[in-house]
Structures are given as structure tokens and as C-alpha cells.
Image (cartoon, rainbow, N blue to C red; front, side, top):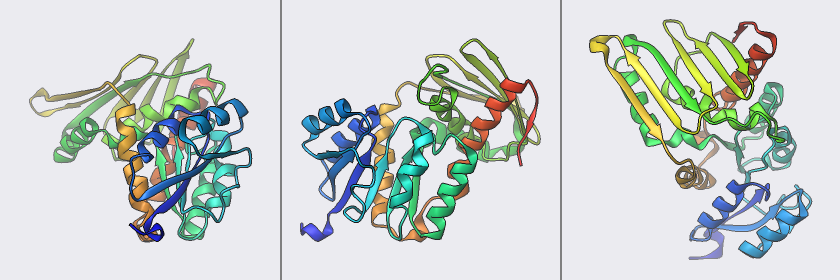
Length: 287
């Protein structure tokens, strides 16, 4: 294969386990080459360099003009807009790990830059690619008027130094967004220690989100015949290959095939609303 047919990418955020997972997967690619990585932690850069044999820089914009796309895996969503900004250029593909950003306004700015510059944007939680959740969504689509309620649960890391609740909560929120496509009208939430329980109000039913267990579960209840569907997700790492495959496909796709931009930021708005709800003990309306 000619060198000109190989897409060149960099990873931004060597401190993340996701960065290493993507790097291992890219080692087997014949069409995409990892040429370098960025990290703010020297120890993480050194370990990444030794493991994968690529240049590691302490400058996040070091690969501008050298790559066709970047995978932003930095753990703290507060850093994501600044990391993405230099690479949101025409034809570039930018993957941003969950959360897209910690702040909804920054998420809106990131998406606006991608749209204005005709960059291709993807990312969020890998759970949106989970086959059991997609099957459950199909059940909802087959009988949308029959849904009477839903419940979802997943781990959370309230004490995380990478944004607290906002660091891991997007996984659970994107589970709900994947299965239930209708708009969320409002959010209520209660925090009890390191556990958060949220209630999402839709037009005709509510869904509960339980942040604080070890497993990833999703269930939807239907009115007809008391039908009840449930799935259990045991492993997130197995989904890394699916989201990386989506990113690699976008590298060669025209900008028109990029993801629905507003949908990419929805988990940020919902997470922010849940946080405000449990901090203020009020119902938060969503536009």
C-alpha cells in the first residue's frame, strides 16, 4: 500500500487508559498510523513512548499540520476544548472522549468550531455502540407509545480529580440517550454520599438513573402484556474497537458524513443539569 493512502493520527492524553487501548488497536491497522502523542504528565509520556515507540510531546499542538486526525483521550473534560481547537480545521477528524466538555457552553463552542471549519467530530461514551443497548432501542422504536418507564445504572466516581461527577457520569447518561431518543423535559436528582439518583422526565414517562453500582444495566418497561426488556453490560473495553473503527472510517469520509453535532453535546447538558439538580435540590428544566 502506498504511503499516501495511510492516514496519520495522534493521541492527546497519554495519561488515560483509553489512549493505550487505542494505541494497541492502531498497531494492527494497515490504513491508519499513530505518529505521536501528547501528555501533560512526563511519566505517562515516558511510559507511552516505551510501550508504543512514538514521539511524545508536552505541547498539545505539536502535531498540527502533520496528521489527518486526533484522538483526544485526556481525562478531564475541562481540557478538551483547548486540546481540540488547533485541530478543528477543514477535513480534519477529531475524536473527543467522554465527556465532550465539562461545561455546556464550551461544548457548544467546540461544536460551533467544528461546524464552521467543516471538521469531522465524533466521540463521547463508547456505550452508544453496545449491541444490547441498540437492541433495546429497537424494542422502544417498535412500540414507542407502549413505554411506561425505564431505568439505568452504572458506576460513578464522585471524588475523581478529573471533574468529579462529570468524569464518569456520561457513560450512564449516553446509555439513556441511546435507548430513549425522545427529548428530556426536566431533571431531578438526589445525592447521598457518593451515590446519585436522577429522574429524567419525558413527555409520557420517566426514567431513573442510578449512579453508584458496579454494573452497567438498562431496562425498559412496556404497557402491553407487561413486557420488560433488560440488558447487562459487563465490559466497556470491548467497545473501544467499535468507536475507533467509527473514527477511522470518518478519516476518509467527506464532512457531510460527520455525526449529528447537537447529539454529541447532549450528554454534557444532561450531566450539568443533574449536577445542578442535586446541588440545589430543584427541578432543572431542559430546553
